[in-house]
Length: 142
Image 1 (cartoon, rainbow, N blue to C red):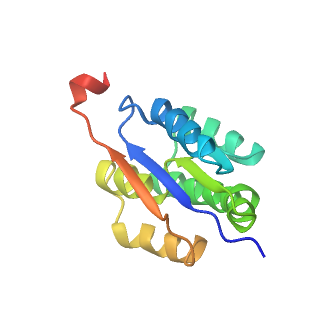
Image 2: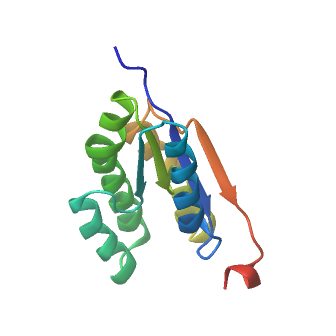
């Protein structure tokens, strides 16, 4: 029986260095014998990448945006996150649900209770084992 892997997420504003650090973290863990799967949200699966393109380049209603984010996340969990955790891998994700609370609620004003309901529906049983938050001044991120 394989022990469940660990689920690590990296959060922060665009330009904070998340992608760069994910590479370092993945290398660090792999050098210590961990099987590592690095992924991202939105995206991480063929369907998720198509949804990512829509989310990043199409204007849409805020609620539509939130629903598409969670649709992408649910597919990501089913195809990448959950199977790899079950196989004992450490999954390292560039963003997860914290990003929805930051962008759709904090940034765009969507009622937080709507995101809480989507989170409870899409992944009531899964939260990150560790979240790293890269918090840098805006002028550094730019």
